Amino acid sequence: MIEYYCKVNEAPKKIEIKGNKMRVIYVAGKYTGNSDWETYNNIHHAKVEARKLWNTGWATICPHANSAFFGGEGSHEVDRMKWLEGDFEFIRRSDAIFMLSNYRESQGALEELKLAQELGLEVYYE
Image 1 (cartoon, rainbow, N blue to C red):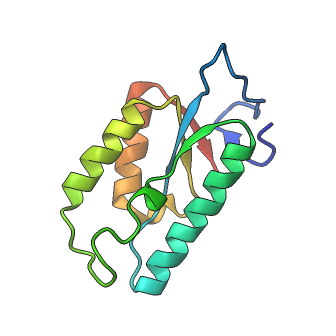
Image 2: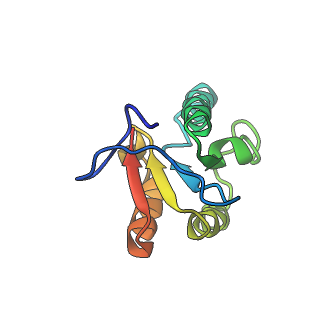
């Protein structure tokens, strides 16, 4: 049961597994910080929330954990569109998107939300 997450205009609901298929949710929020420490904290925040989602019955995609510091610490100039296109593919394969509380601070997260809405995915907010 999702207890503290809310979907716009709809009460939270228990996640049900239909047959052998788990529902998939994508975690979106700010990744890059102004320092390596801030980036680390953004990654940690996403991982904590992803774990909570797993515990409520979602199969969770957390791109923060998937590619943490792939560009190297101190390197924030990785090909942004390469990462974003990969994230878009994850979203296309998801049933829902979960927006972290810091998502408004991230242009990438805002683009991910836009795609999820265009695809008609369920949208949940921290």
